[in-house]
Image (tube, rainbow, N blue to C red; front, side, top):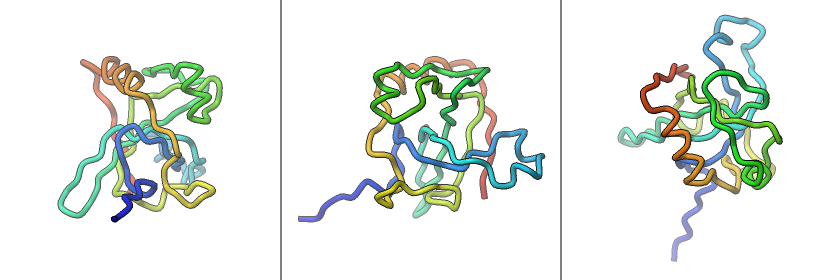
Length: 137
């Protein structure tokens, strides 16, 4: 029997550690190597053998369009106590890409995923809004 290892596959709702580049950061030479931050995989699109992934940043003290993560879920996901999912912009890249930071066990995704309730809250909050896209080579 074959074991399906999901530790290296992108799936909607997974949390990764990623060098997220904000829209305005692209114009700042000092941000050429952005800090690693947790990000939520929002969408995965297969194009033949490629996987195009969109991630939303998880930021403490965020302003703008965001969804608060319930305290118990923050703790379960290993996130800062003030972390919110920001959905006004996303980074899009080909998986796995050089901007991922592997976990201590060398997997590419954190062991726990976001809840369906959180994903639904983000989807509801995004309704009627646009999301800026930053493409990462």
